[in-house]
Image 1: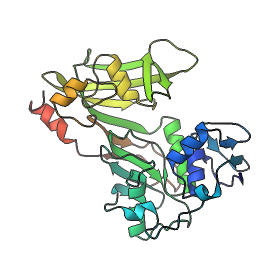
Image 2: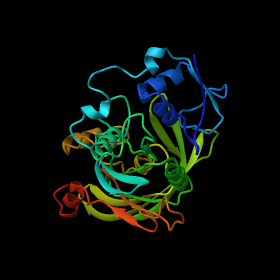
Image 3: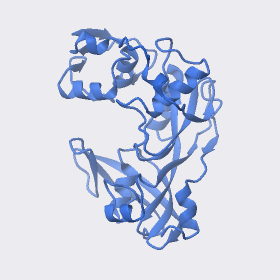
Image 4: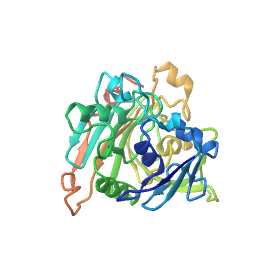
Length: 316
């Protein structure tokens, strides 16, 4: 058993803190350990998303060989990668990376967005394993979703950025193609989301409940083509699979979505990943030096290829 007393200048997720302390671990091992009651925070089994702060006590019931760094000659997993992340914006405190569809943000495999970011910073001489603060994900995208992801480069920036997201001050806009045309063409959808962790799926309902979390999703139809619609979506709340499940609940699942969508349509139109892109981020006006570089700014990607195909009627 390993006893750790947390030392951090700002609250941080339990999984991120443990991954920094023990680079040999990964999210897969942490999730398995949690399921087996091998991680205790202040004497309790709590989700890996729980934020820890200075003075908290963590007990890890894992063998030393799982916690020790592997003596492999090829070094950290990110050094095995061929391509670094595509970075849209970077300063001393944060960076914005463009995640391709099909790439997980983090996890057991070597090729993740986080590892591509580490490779990018390593190649620029800004990061060395075990030295200083390791870049931290401030939010996540599903593996099949493409688009902008925010990462912090300092503890202070991480605390500020996660606070912005938690308080819904960072405006997130998506582009997606739905199988079905939503009616009305523009609306604010509200409801409650219930998560089934065992199935890795969520359900949207109109009624509150003990396990239900309130959600709001706003959409605007930009174009229609045959059975399909191109939407701009604003994510007001940020729950698991929210956009995918919310649009599916009104009969307009996202094209390419194998979990909530139409698999016959996905196969017919040859979509392997969902046609959903985290397209635009707008930061509020902010005080202080850490986020001065993004204060009041909007960052936007080029529209994905499938958007133009809906606009010109090629995809329908």
